[in-house]
Every structure is written in structure tokens, then in C-alpha cells.
Image (cartoon, rainbow, N blue to C red; front, side):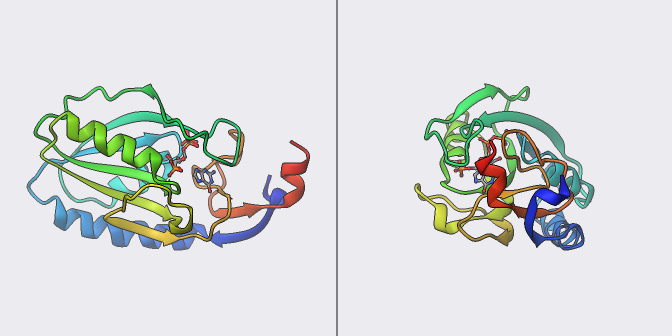
Length: 180
Ligand SMILES: O=P(O)(O)OC[C@H]1O[C@H](OP(=O)(O)OP(=O)(O)O)[C@H](O)[C@@H]1O
Ligand SMILES: Nc1nc2[nH]cnc2c(=O)[nH]1
């Protein structure tokens, strides 16, 4: 699997360091607030487990599954809610954890949903931001790294469901797409 990677963008150590820094900031942000942390499945699983271990505050954890890429590298444009939250979010201070914001459609869909459900506040922490991919106007409050306008994999991010378990973020060799 590692042989399929052309270039590593962010190493495991770099990701751990940024998670520690963001976790400290989030500890301050949510002191005494008992936030509801929402992990956006599946991609944000690895980053979420890093972030919450760095947050020294009481919190609740929930999961939502949103999907719009299927097995492709380009968004279908339609966000599907395939698993809803278990928690009642009314009046909660919500922290959304994402792996990447690209077009922004997934995050906009989720933030709009949470606002319709009358949350008290919503903030977003993402491992990666790809500003050059943005098609809707939305920003994260906490960002690990910016990435160039290329399809990235690893650390939760997949290509056709593979590579989520790579311990770093990288770019695939072009031959991988040719042999799909
Ligand atoms: O800003 P956007 O263009 O909407 O892209 C970002 C979303 O795309 C990926 O999810 P995907 O739909 O691939 O589902 P997955 O997390 O299960 O892989 C990623 O995990 C983000 O949630
Ligand atoms: N794996 C992966 N999923 C994405 N979803 C939106 N952008 C990306 C990306 O660059 N890589």
C-alpha cells in the first residue's frame, strides 16, 4: 500500500503535533461547556480520536455519516445523509470534526442541519483545508493544514475506500487511477 504513494504531504509526527496544538486551543474554547463533538464519518475517525484525547474537558461524542464522493475523486454534488446523529442537539455547543473541507458542500449541509435543529453554537475543526476547491462559502474555525488542489489520501481519507489506514497524508501515483 505504501508503494502506491507518490508524495507524503504531512507525516504522522506533523499530524500529532497539530492535533496537540488544536486540542489545547479547544480545551480553552470549551472549558465548562460540555460540548457535543460530532465526528463526520468515515474520513474524520482518525483525526477525531486524536483531537478528543488532547481535549481536557468533559464532552459527549456522536457520529454522523455524510457522503458525496462514492468511489470517485470528484464530488457528485449531492450530499447523502447515510447515518444520522443519536443525540438531541437542541441548545448544545457543537464541535464538528472533519478530515477535509474541499468544495465545502458536506460541511455546509451539516452546519445548516445543525442550525435547523437549534444548536446553541457550532464550530468546526478540520485536519485539512483545500481552499482552492471551494464551491460554497464556508470556513472552519480550527485548521490543521492547508493542502493544494489535488486529491489526497491517508489518515482517514480514502480513494475507493482504500488508504484510510495510512498513518500520513499523501498523494497517489497517477498509475493508481489508471488501473482503477
Ligand atoms: O468539501 P467537500 O467537497 O464536501 O468534501 C469533504 C468531504 O468529502 C469526504 O467525505 P466523503 O463524501 O468522501 O465520505 P467519507 O468520509 O466516508 O470518505 C470528506 O471526508 C469530507 O467529509
Ligand atoms: N480522499 C479524499 N477525499 C476528499 N473529499 C474531498 N476532497 C478530498 C480529497 O482530496 N481526498
